[in-house]
Image (cartoon, rainbow, N blue to C red; front, side):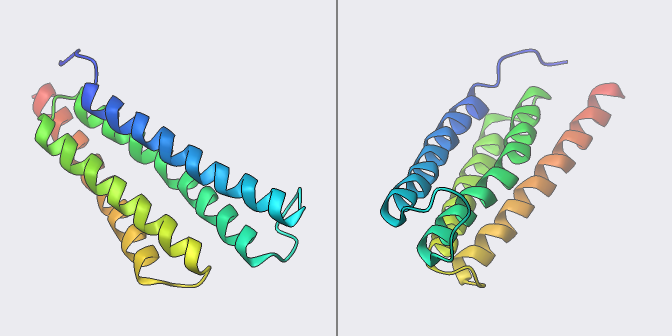
Length: 135
């Protein structure tokens, strides 16, 4: 069973740490601007910033865990990069879409679909590799 450190996934995790920081800062700046310290107080801009951050926090941890495990079970680096890059595009698109509207927008829908694609693909790759390693 492969035992090397997941260097590719670690790089994507670091990148997502920076994206999370930006989304958090947007919420903070909107709170300072509006003077609203809890909830969104009916402020549309703050509501969008909160939702973009929350959606990121809901989806990214599982996707990153799967990315680490994909690399950990020995899937080749180009595939790990493809999953990681797709996830970056997906989450940026989703954040842009949510920053524009809480309703359905093409970037938000594309981001959600691509995120689900990464989660499903990574999950299936892990199952495939585990079966191959145990056989």
